[in-house]
Image 1: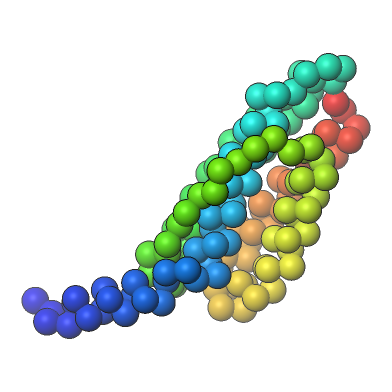
Image 2: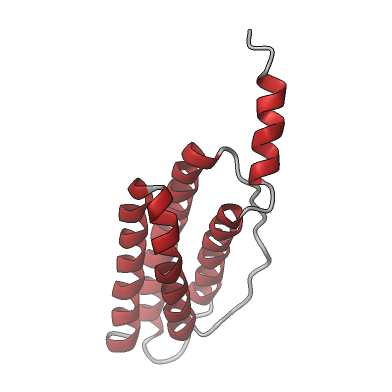
Length: 138
């Protein structure tokens, strides 16, 4: 048994608590929650198309957030994740702002963890596809 394990765990905890990566992953889960709220609140003309598009986005983002978080943890150790409360936001502008935010952070994240890049590109692609559906099909 490695006598240094407790020291290694303490070092890992110190580097991961409050990290930018923990915050980034927390934001991904919060994004999924906010999309779910918009999905459930769809009403009026085009509501069914909006409901379906946001439901697809929610399913994708939930799975991708988990996958991205686990991959980052493969590099950084267990992250401190705290998912903030979510509330309704107008979906198109919210998704566009989150997409821009993720794109701006991709360069930094992908330099350290190149295998996360494809996962983030897939996430941005799903977001772009949803924006198209909401703007043109709903």
